[in-house]
Image (cartoon, rainbow, N blue to C red; front, side, top):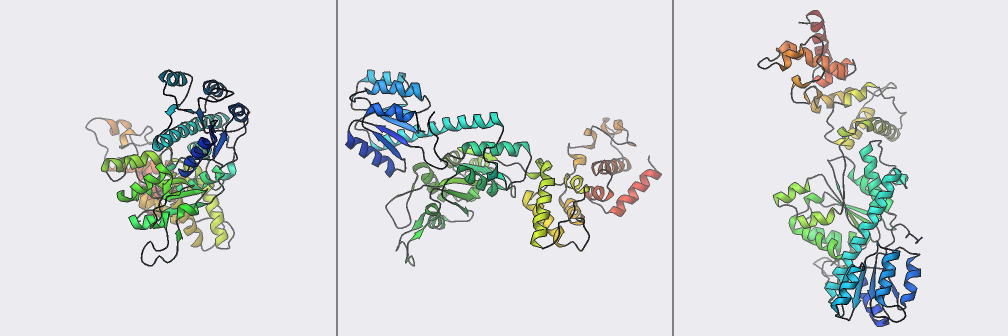
Length: 485
C-alpha cells in the first residue's frame, strides 16, 4: 500500500525522462508556476517500485527511453494506479502512437518541444482531475464510516444537528485539497468558525489569516493582500509583506467576498487561476502558497444575475462549497448553545452559572433569530449581565426579543384554516368553509389557545408569542372561560 502524505504537504508530480537536462528544465518550469514538488526519474525501471509506496498527483512520461519503453511503462502505471493521470511527452509526431497511448489510459499527449502555456495548462488539468478523484474517494470513506477522524478540529462548534455534522464530514474530506472553499450562510451562523475548523482539519503548517474584504477598493485590496515593494508609491519607505505571504503554507480567509468590487474581483480570479500575484511596484511574480477560504451572506448566484459578481470567480471559489443552516432550522442546538454561553458569560463576569428554566426552549422555538448564533450569544450575555440576583436565568430579555421579532407559527402555513388541529371551542368548518370567515372572537380564541399549546401552558411565553402583556393574556383567558362561544 502506498504511503499517504502528512497533512498539509503538497502531492508531488513525477517526471520520467532519460534526458537529465529535460528533467531539470521541466521541474524548474513547474516550480516557477507554483506546481510541485517534483520527483524525477531518468531510469524508468525505478518508477513502479516508487509509485507502490507514495502518493502521487500525476506523472509526466517520455515515450522513447531505454530499458523500459514508455508505452509499456504507461500500461504498468495504469494497471497499478489507475487514479493517477499520466501525461505523455514525446518528440514523435506519429499519430498511431498518440492514439495508442490515449486508448491505454493516457490523460494527455504532448509533442516536444511543447509550448509553455500548453504544458502548464495540461499539468494543471491533470492535477485537478487527480485531486477530484482523491476527494471523492475520501468523501466515500467518510460517509460510509459516519465518523469524524479529527473531531477536535470542530470542537468549538456546538451542535448535534445532522446537517451540521454532515458538513463537518464533507469539510474533513476536502480539507487537504488546495482548491478554495466557499462558505455561505446568513449573518451570525458561524462562517468564520467553520473556516477555522476547515483550516485545522487541513493540517497545514502555516497559520490562518483573516480579512473582511467588504469596502476595500482596488488599491487597498492589492496592498493588503499582495503587499508592496519599497518605493512603490509615496511614503512606501519599506517593503510590506501582504496577507498572502503571511498565510504561506496556511489559509487565507476572505470574509464578505460578495461585497468585493467587480474591478477587484479580476485580481482575485488571477490569483486563484495562476497561483501568482504581483506586489505593488513589482513586475516579478510571486507564488502563492496559501489555501483560500471565502465566505459570504449573499446569494452569489443572484449577484451574478445582477452583474455584480463574476461567474468565473464564483466557479473558481466554489470548488468546494458549504451552506450553513440558520439557527431557526437547527433548534435542537439551543440547549448546547445556551448552556455554553451561560458558562462563558458567568466566567467573564466572575459569577456562578445560572440555571436554565425549561420554558426558554418553547419560547425561543417561535423566534426567527435574525442574527442567528451571534444574536443568541448577545441575548444570553445581556440577560446574565442584567440579572440582579437568584439562581435562575431570567426570561424577560428573551420575551422582549420574541415580541419584537418572533415568527408566528400560528400562521406559518399562511392561514388559520390550514392548521391540522383546531383548538377546542372553534369549529373547524368555520375556518375552512368557502365564504365563511371566523369572527374576531373565534380567531382571537384560536390564537390564544394555540399560543398556550405552543408555550406548553406557560402564560409568559404565550404572551410573548402573541406580542401582548401577560395581564392582557390573563384577561383573554378569563373571558374565553366565561364565554367560550
